[in-house]
Image (cartoon, rainbow, N blue to C red; front, top):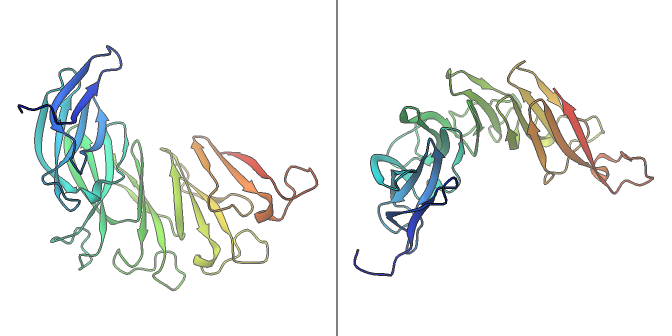
Length: 276
């Protein structure tokens, strides 16, 4: 462009070590969002103007040459694309409603799940309002707010204040609603792990410790359709690893009020592994 003042998006080929410069620049205030890297190409959402509410258009960067192509595909605003999830040849994120009711509930208050496929290239609106979205292969899990998806009490606790998982098979379109008030999901293609607060699940004492103040891991198994409760209370910030057929997680003894490793105190984080 005749100057030396730009920061230019470039693509590094890890196999050859070759760096391909493109004609897409960074900023000066906003960076293009990397949406997906798949099939020897990178897909970037490039804002049309330098504002966070700017609409973005999808561009493809060829991995072999660095050549860029605008796909003339609107993919939401810059703010919508803060945390896209991608796996294999797909990416998923939430697009905020502005002028169109994207999930058909009669308002413009929601952020609705969209999925980008590259085989063939298409952007799908799943029509699901979501507070979180997670993607692994053909499996997508959206945590759907009851008030934002038609005002339906999806876990049967008498209120509309919860968000519950909807599991979507992206290959077939099949959807399964899992009737638990959930947050902090972690998934692979078969298993979806999420925390359930007892106070939000009809004040149920899920782990049987005499109170309703805990958050307890639950596992939804796509293969069997069953939900399994994982043991005692878990701390909200505890990590979990999902790798079919196993789930590994930590339990803080003070939360469970049990000496889980037999060392005479209740001050430890103890790893648990469950195979499905």
